Amino acid sequence: MIPGLKLAPQHRVYAGFAIYSFAMGNIFPRLPDIKRAMRIEDGTLGLALIGTPIGTLIALTLATPVLERVGFRRALLWLVPLLALAYAIAVHAPGPASLFLMLLPVGLMIGSIEIILNVEADRTEFLLQRRIMNRAHSFWSIGFLGAGLFGGALAHLGLSP
Image 1 (cartoon, rainbow, N blue to C red):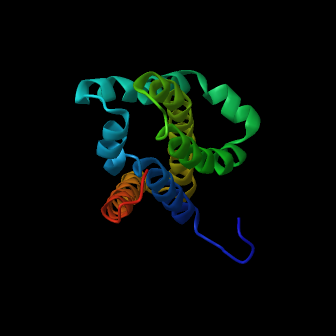
Image 2 (cartoon, rainbow, N blue to C red; image 1 turned 90 degrees about the horizontal axis):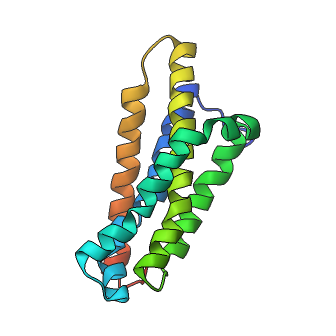
């Protein structure tokens, strides 16, 4: 936590959801540019993108013991910036097979972050004795919207992914 910055527990959860989805969502407005750079069809791009959900499924199934050992807070502080970095690297894949392989660890990170944030939201609900999960996911949507607008603006300015 930043010294002097005191956030209520639910606000920390909301911030986590928004920051995570912003880091994750910037790739989507850039998919046409990625497809064009690789000179591939929609179906081929779609198959390459399946690396992300495969990694996510693996993490959602197997990552909890590792995350508990590392610690949720430490893992989250590393995973969100690494997620943004992994996406930034993946968009420069030379072809669909390499994009698929580069997106597998992205999916592992997404699944791990999902576990952490949802467990923390649940713990915070227990602590506060009131529901925050719906609002937390609203902040996920706000972050994703921001990512779409930001990525779209960068595309409009002609900046490469």
